[in-house]
Length: 233
Image 1 (cartoon, one colour):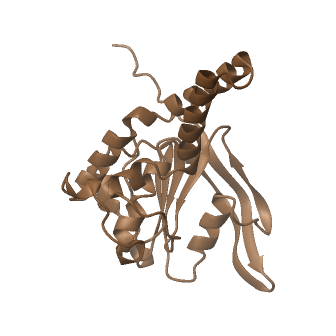
Image 2 (cartoon, rainbow, N blue to C red):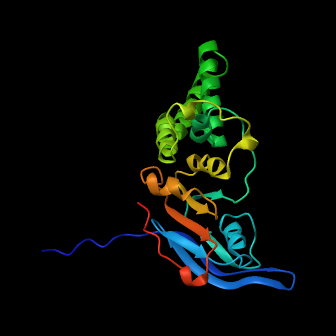
């Protein structure tokens, strides 16, 4: 019998000698680690240990005082903070499926380009090239299957099919759990960074929807409660 092929793993984020200080207050220093494709990493610590600060450095929202963060080419970072801004009202299914601003803009641009072609506005070749690039972007995002994926994601959270197609009321009446899950639709091909309070039920019950290159999670528990998460698909 031949040997089993060795699993090929690739680094998607690498931190080298990271440190953050605010004046004389050192949050952490000399942190070095890698997150590889398929990893699910839990960052465990008490309040004030620097978990959120480290996440902000990893996603590029905060410059480290020392050290470097290297991301693999083409990797984007989806970040689910504990506190999130409001988003437009409307059916919950639409919020989840089309939360990404890029997807909304690409769909609007596709419609506008079709109108230009129909009306004869602009150079046909230039419009066709632009349309081809826009369609390619939408196909890479699997945009034509977004609604089905969003419906399965919401179904895993216990929403009835008829409930996700109506507006649940003013945004400020939604629970944090419901508001959080709308962000999952935006991060299909990202390093997914989750903070405490993220709807893990959605991650556990929708393995086909959570196909991320890697997952990092902060957890507020006692240091002795460190645990290992299964690797992502």
